[in-house]
Image (tube, rainbow, N blue to C red):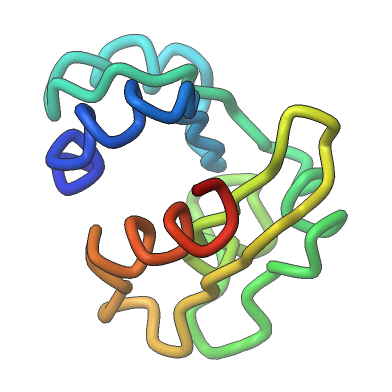
Length: 114
């Protein structure tokens, strides 16, 4: 998440709001909120409703933790949505350990917002 703060000036210039969605419990999100210095709205998707709406449920070997009631994890993704809610760009990670860097998001913003 720290990598998105590298783009703070670019986000602010374009009026982009960062929103994160994870399967973490709300109390876990609140507890760790300041850890990365991310200025974002951080939401919990314990039911995977948002994950499934975007077709981002991980179907691979890395599913939910058996000690947790989450049945699966989302595929790491960055999604650029305009003010009307139209999805302009999705970058879903093929490998959950290798996510696109800030330059991919910056290129998408330039392509779709400039």
